[in-house]
Image 1: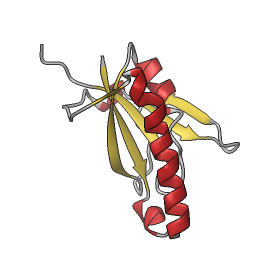
Image 2 (image 1 turned 45 degrees about the vertical axis):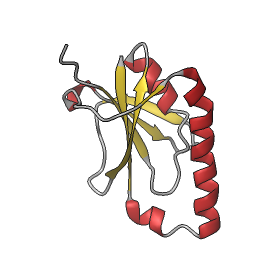
Image 3 (image 1 turned 180 degrees about the horizontal axis):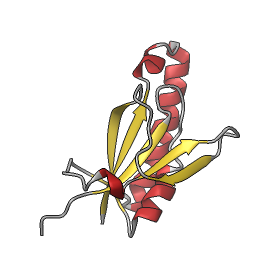
Image 4 (image 1 turned 180 degrees about the vertical axis):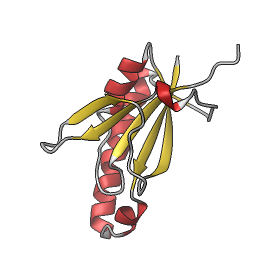
Length: 119
């Protein structure tokens, strides 16, 4: 099944990064893609999403570890900065993969949502 991984954050934090910090973060992101692309878990394209009640949210806890909760409980200052399409067996697998995303400046939370199927 296909899932959208929505990347939320305060985009002002991203623009305030130094060039070196931005480069370091981009290398972490490229590393994430290099890890998951060969597994077939990253799908291409955009899609209509199911209602937000079907979502899971991944946040960094105080100790830096990811915490997965039901629903899209995000703060208003956060915006969607990017979307990655995942191909997973279920929403729990999609959330576990999302939990490996490098949460950093400008990327404070992830939401995983099932994609609407019209078949």
